Length: 189
Picture 1 (tube, rainbow, N blue to C red):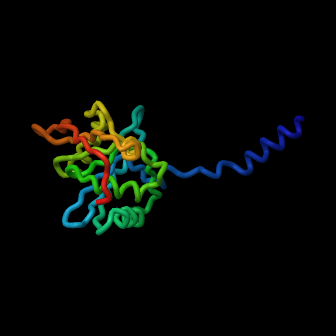
Picture 2: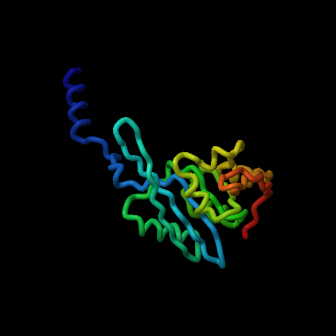
Picture 3: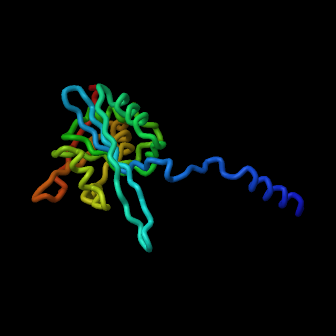
């Protein structure tokens, strides 16, 4: 019995963890801003970079931006432009200019099906302004009582129910919750 335990421990030490990845090789994306103007999609990724300083962890942010004729192409171009591996598992919000439902419909086609537990938020101002304001943990989703995830939107779509998507704006240089946009069944726009 001891031989089996020793062999198992030895094999674990030799084989190691195949899923190991250096944190410095990952671009941890926390928020994404998307807008569509003149049939061009502009996507901005917000990468969080945690740094340990003395007894606290500080966070800085990098922003990556790309414009393309389709949402999928813009995502793919950003993936090629960023030298690190894109890590979307910590994605908290996708902020969309105005209330463009077509972008949400396109998101379902672009993202992996298991990646749908982030909030969808509409923005009256430019979503990049909201994205930059949301650094230092002033996150947009803390303003909103009822978060609306892509998963809940998909579920409402399947059940042919209406759903409320929050809209944010700026007032007196502060980001505020504006109102909800109630939407019904999505149409293939």
